[in-house]
Image (cartoon, rainbow over all chains, first blue to last red; front, side):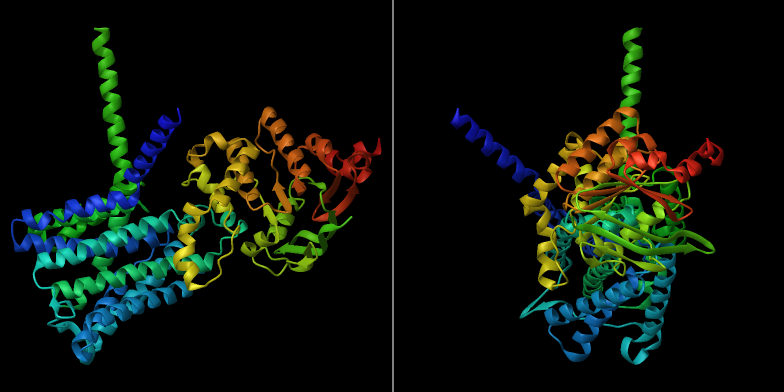
Length: 340
Length: 259
């Protein structure tokens, strides 16, 4: 009797491990680590690295837009701050990479925290206006401080990442640095979502006065979400700069900022896995539709309108709706057959 | 008898309208106090002032000897003041259990120490068995424990009202403000609510509730405060209130009061 209950307890414990976030992400890491072995070529490898960069930045956008419902469009500008700071520290001051990376992520995080503190009294589309202003200021600084940033000509060449004597050189080397980073940040974002912080932020979004009366301080949490999004954007910016090797203002334009909003809306506001899947999907799609060039952006607008119109919960909601419809169609047609 | 709540000269105007006008009242610890009055008499405004969602123009609010009228709403939970809303204020995208977890937000205070922000805040929900237990007890208290995994938005209106209550009980507040708790409930749910209020009182909680349903409030209150046009017009035990001419006048019209 006691033996069987011990077995049951053990199997329950095993199931808990299987179901745990850590285990799932480790499996994902193991599976995705195989990609360089099957990648058709250098271009595909480089493209995979770039997608990982976008995933990191989009996860940050998901924290501010998805978790707290605050429409911030500052994500690209914050990534630019991270990327430019790190590149400049390495290029002009010969700073070691790890130190430069820490400083630049701190810079983007504190810029975001400051922005969050400034905007903690405004909500939704008013925040959108303030953050557009922030974006424009940052881009104008990049374009006009030619002596520092190279202005419209850009910064070139940003060196490769170096850890001590080891230089990360090929795209597949980069993949093995960026993949664990992205997954770690995904893990971090998921943990935040179910933490005390995450619940407080979701509560503020859902019903601010109810959250207030149970002790959730809005200014603190809204500043914290902005700071976290800046943290993600900073890391993404550093990753971008050292992967591409070139930094120009057009890499951080308003359209790229809009792209992150599209990703979060399509990914289902607050759903980290949805955001990751949509980032991969949209990048693959845009890669195949390169012929359309800039007019491809038009599709983003249509996508946003259609999503919000049909399924405000994004693609996850659309998928569950579709599955349910198909299931229902099947069972009802099954009924007809048996009657006949 | 110690006083838990003391309100003095409390006033609030919206434009030219005096929603609450120099209101004075005090509640003893462990009491059930009713707050009644016709529509627009200032009941909800009073509760909003007490819970900090509105700032008073004038007057003081003292809870257990400490003045709280200058504090923002989110700090008042720490002083043992909790409230529910007329329209149930639940977090619809969160599960029932997560709703009560948010209610336990000020159960442990973390401050702004970087170490706490970085580590304690997100380990607390998974590792703090004490908080989880409190949350389950709170759900059991209102009879919603079987709905814990459900999405709060999927609950019925009545269940959402109970959840609203369960979520503010997690921290064990000393004073609970209920804003029309019976509004929109069916008779069986009203009976259930009466039971919950009675059990709350026996656990030592003080309750102030505003209500339209006069028969319900007469049944369970120790004392009743009657408001009209933001002013207190009567106060006393239910039997006195029932016979008070001014109360009858404002509820039934002056002619009825004359008879």
